[in-house]
Amino acid sequence: MTHSPVGTGVWSSALRHGDAHETAAAAAEIESLGYSAMWIPDVGGDVFGAAGNLLGATTTATIATGILNLWMHTAEETAAQHAELTAQHGPRFFVGIGISHARLINSAIEADAYQRPLAQTRAFLDALDAADVPLAVEDRALAALGPKMLALAAARTAGVHPYLVTPEHSRIARQAVGPEAVVAVEQGVILETDQQRARQIARTNLVRYLELPNYTNNWKRLGFTDEDIADGGSDRLIDALVVWGDEATIAKRVQEHRDAGASHVCIQVLTENPRALALDEWRILAPALV
Image (tube, rainbow, N blue to C red; front, side, top):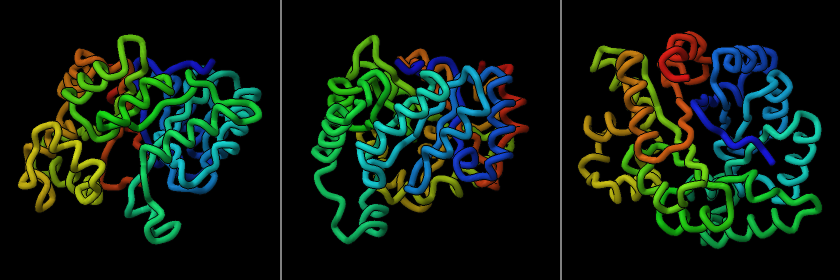
């Protein structure tokens, strides 16, 4: 059984797409700083190779997909790769699975390919169960936001990996999946006390998400409006989704997720260069968060 993520982790696209030697060295340092898990995104390509690189550079940290795009990999490949990486590195590979977004899938695969997301997710889980070496329930989670996907996660996986959510959603997720399940929440953070500069960094990083219905519908369920989502996002929405400030301010938001029911919080450091490894920020934040 994979070590489920606990404590505080790091979510980083740079760990997924950066130079393999640099990301391996960064992973070793992230682990030494006390972060318990590293999460990497997936929009196709060799996500398992990237996970193996991080597993090989570490000894105790959980390496997780946040998320594995179920349109971009077969369930059979996913289960086989999980079994192989677990055999090589021990039970440290946790598979977060997500349905992705219509805009991405329809452009990457074919027009109108994105259909029936709940049924597609259920079918992928069925295929994981039926694989030659099944990917066990306790080794997988769903990127669940709305009530139907939260219910599916509760029934068929170890828990949930919500992205771009507030502590209020952590409370909703915990109620949906029960007291023992994984609630591993991504939280965007900006280590910057200048309000104008911090919000500009946040908007630059969030702009592409403001047009994706999976997220906008969830924010509306949480009480935000079309006006909050328009024109680059209101200050109210930006500040709710991304915490900016000093170490204590960021630690307070992380604790709010925990108080609401999160069992694990993975911070995504946002900077003016999203492709860069945020080593300085991870070092500065570690004493306050881990």
